[in-house]
Image (tube, rainbow, N blue to C red; front, side, top):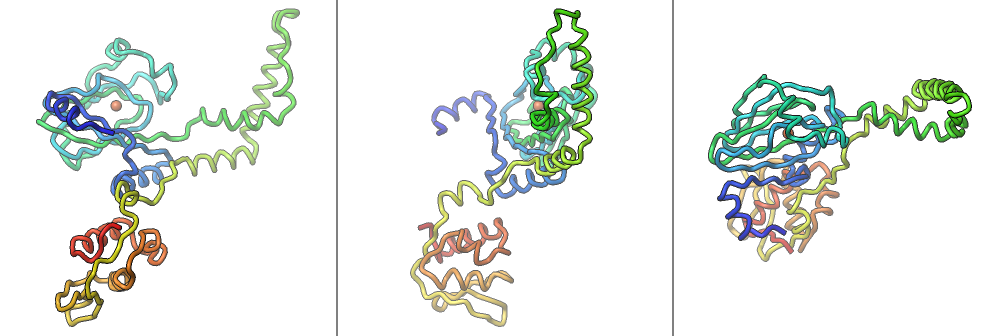
Length: 308
Ligand SMILES: [Fe+2]
């Protein structure tokens, strides 16, 4: 729970606000995350960054996943430096290098860009960067994308190796022969593991792993669906009628136009004392989430329905 009485004074003094894991919070964010996930075979996570005054939220660093910065408000100047490692991963080794290491290895600035609302900046993993708010208040959403990598194959090969007697056998004691038997055993193990990687079943499993490498996303929009999944119809003499100008929702003598294609849905809603959004979705599976939310908000504003 956020204590606004404490938060707002901190923000006014120049603190940055970071909100992690917001990809499922609105239909727009979720759609953007899904596009990244299906288009690039990865797991997308979205974090929101809001800062005030000329403030640098983070020191120069590189990320261990791909980053897509979507700028929303204000202006922010990004410095992109060089890369020191190819494709770093989220392992302690890369995560604990420290500020001095980063300062010593970031290199000269290779790109400086001032992002304005609507701009998108792609930061490949491993590339050093930092950012400075260059207007009074700035807001951006950073989509982080983690893709399947070679190291993930190690887990798949481990599962395969469990079924192989050579992989289960004890390793030879290196003391009697100065490690000769152990070296030969390791060479055999290496060949065996290489063989596993060429097996059709392991290759098919790996393909399935890559194709399905994304977060499951429920078809809900928070907080709306969690808080107001059930609606009731308000008192009124509602009817859906076709007029010379198109379909209209009548309440007694008053009428409001119904957008094209929504007449059946509005008729279904006013024909019952109440409904929940799950029922509505099952009855009209073609109704997109954003359009459904829009329609319910309009009907609520017109005092046709309200949250039960
Ligand atoms: Fe970053």
